Image 1 (cartoon, rainbow, N blue to C red):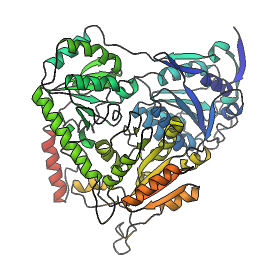
Image 2: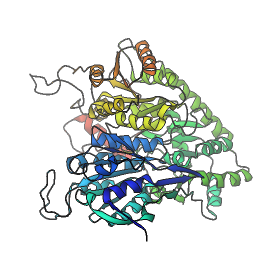
Image 3: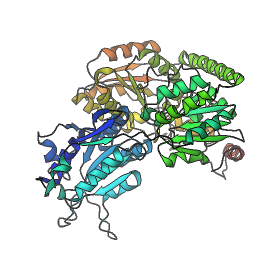
Image 4: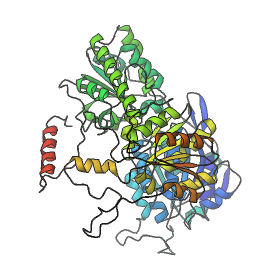
Length: 623
């Protein structure tokens, strides 16, 4: 057997550089590069191997470990999970900074490879700098914190363990059903240890994206279920995007007159103006989708996790005879809400179902089709109204979204993640194409937006501009990758909606009878001792200029459009600081969300909210 003597770090870099993914006949290099911040737990091990010029991986220097992991996550998401960038860090605090991003990737079913440094396997220098010691179990290190948020976790304590660990890592990263965060913890001494690795481990390895079909007889079962229902509704989830099934699902919806509602991950894969596309569903949904959902007697859930937002905490569907058919590659998701599970690739399954349903001569009930059309028309008028909403006191958030949606063109991408913006975007945004809507809402992770925009830009390259739409709260969480975007000459455009606080949560708080508390950005009042003083005014444009970005401050729609034009023409990252009115986002549109309300409180409005929630709990589907 031919072998090559290499360190663990060198073998890992060589292995990653030779991983490929084959999708529908196209062979794609799977690992594009590595993000890193080199602390002492990685710089002289894996860092030495990355520095060598004998591989094609690009090294990206991050500013915050969570930020660079979010960049890598967004890169994989924008590439529909077909390409990744790995991430490495030092031990201890550097590694732990990535735990939030690990949870974000796993909850969104996005492949993310993390390579955190770890403490010495030999244990001789212990306690080494940045080491956490557990007196009850010496095998536990900071990297064990990743276990709860990872799909695969391993610690390489001997050089030969790298082979099985790396192959298992790729097994998970390329699996459409079980992908998520993979963590290979690398003790800093082991990274530099040498081993005679078999040449076959280091050679080109091609992983195949397999499209699982429906099992024999299952397509007939689905067709039978649809055929005996009068008010079916499709839910389009992220699995439709990653399967490349958007065109097939749109055609299916139009051909058979079955309306379609979207999740955040599924939005945009079917054109927004396609007949029957009612937009977002549930808590972040449209009035049209929510009304049709209440009437539906069958839900065809395609590639969706059926989370609480899109099922309105399981209250979205009112028909007592409702049946749910779930088509999903992931069995865990397919069994949710007592659905009838069908484990299959979305595009393949639709290809099996469509001709059978067509042979049946199935068409949507004319009265139902007409109602769907009327509700869609009504909703389009509501979006137009909100796009043009003007207030003499200042800019509304919905007007900002309207101006941006009109301005962005084909190839441009909008990135968002947290606060009230995802609700407004799912309701109001009209995507230009199926790659233009990039929302992280599996975790709704504040701080994703700026690094996410950079990751998306690395994927989009020169095909279009990437815009991060972020609230001031989310921006303050994490924005240091602005500097990385400048370093890499990857222009991104950050639109900060400054409404002086966490107003999405403030709305939730006040809607349940709790006075405004702890969510607005205010100075501490000297008389009362509470955070109820004057608003804190922040110049986010000045902050961006300090990094070296171009920046604009705007207060009117006209100024916003002018700033967007200037940003499009700029040659570097741009931040637009948009001063907006508080509470100028959209409403709930006949939906409900379950939250934990105190059962006992001296506040009468809180007790009213608790009683209302108890009434709603009698209406939800319990599983």
